[in-house]
Length: 455
Image 1 (cartoon, rainbow, N blue to C red):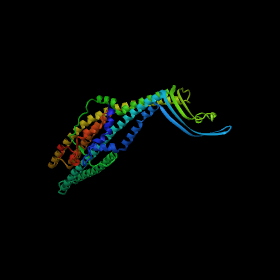
Image 2 (cartoon, helix red, strand yellow; image 1 turned 45 degrees about the vertical axis):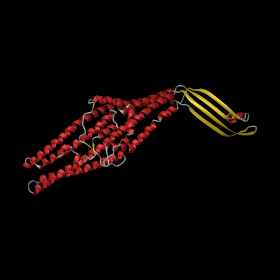
Image 3 (cartoon, one colour; image 1 turned 120 degrees about the vertical axis):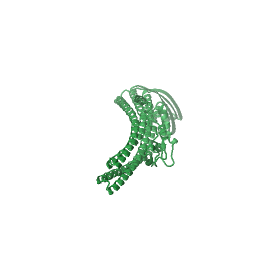
Image 4 (tube, one colour; image 1 turned 180 degrees about the vertical axis):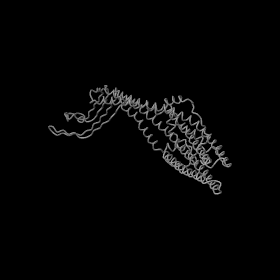
């Protein structure tokens, strides 16, 4: 049921765009990916091509009707030269009555059609995850760039204060050099963050097929909750039953099994109904031995049941059976390997989301603790119990905590989507739900921290 409803949702997703006036949103980017991504276009054409396997196989079970027409001169040169002109029409119908090989080919084509649909759906799910990953990677890069800018400003202020203290004789050269080194490291971090931000936008442009404006950011109020159900085995069971790649591999096994049956059926007799009707010049219809003995038009009709029993085909039939047997074994081994992969992946993804939930909370608390530590260190410096190196270390710890917090909250979003993908339930609705927490006026330099934690 999931497979039947998933395709229309994904194919109609561009109709549900939510495009901001000046900022790109998650749904607007996804709509562009569906419309412009070349891999998506190739996957769609591959799916449309593969689903023609069923009508092609069905056609071999249905009547084959053909009309032949001839017109021309017939010349005979025996005792004397004779030449006549005429025309001939033949209508033939062939209908397989019993051909197990063709029937199993038809069943194999049905399995191929199911596999193609599941493969396409799995690709679409991967595209949803790729879109979200690229979008939030870009937001993370922007937040990290904003953090680097704030860090550089903080170290710049500290450097200026240290210079003033040094000029006034209140600090030594070691303090001056330490402050300068921290400022230089922050400058290098800013350059690296700028490059990473530009790279992230380039990756998003490649995915969506066009350049993107600034992105709407995600609110810090996004709920960070454990996955429901909260049991890993429940997600494993759902993944083993609904994972699209796994279901596609099962369809591949079914197709290989039907192909093997078709190959074995090549040893069996086949029965065919042949119906024919011909009308035309008698000399064109008969052999040249009777040329000129009859004149005028002639009508012939026939109904025959033809039986064909393969006796020897040079070993080709047996070779096809062996080939199909190995192919079936290959697909079964592939399915077993994929089952293990899905089993491991779903458990790992569940643990990742649970860990992300705890990390977001811990990282947020780490920011609070780092802010308190920095204030205490600055107060200690004022009374002479702390030195400039302690302040620089406290500032560095604070901004590292901010980076870790943003990494964990974006990892939570992507890991949650990955868990749903493994369980076979990921759909555009998950993106729409996330889009509800977007902040269209998100400014990274202001919003890279929750409002209640801004200094």
